[in-house]
Image (cartoon, rainbow, N blue to C red):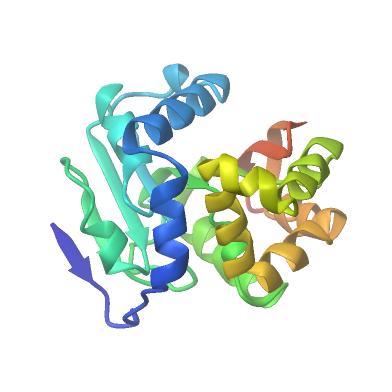
Length: 227
């Protein structure tokens, strides 16, 4: 079921979504998400935890959570086209992650798999998302995200994307290049302000885990207690 929030817009970047779908099969994406969540300690979370995934796309992260036995999962994304690719038990919302329609203190975990770097305006949009995440999380709730991070490995990937011959013989690299090109301004502003981004996030959350590896930051924060 897809519920459309009043502040949602019809958002469909056909070229970007085509590159995203081409980049990985659903099974490949699910395997990736399962490995991430295992690393982030998903098996220690209560199976009745109320979990919402923001920027959930076609919902393969939700499918992984369901396969692990989680029973209260929801997803939010602006693109109805991507949401319609999902098949599972989760309730989906077409809406803006900067303005969530969930009740205060209603979620135990908020998960983001590579969605924050899509935000158009820094710091304003990130501040809005973080404010909403803090609002809906219960005391001591977890904010879990994995996002691109500018490391030597990621610079190498970018260099490979710039070589036409490699893109021609490696469809997945060509798809990645298409995704980067489709959101180049947002992607660059995210990668170029790592310290500022972390300061914003850590003003709201106490770090439980922060690991940078292979062009990604893997992060878990606990909602700060109000003083």
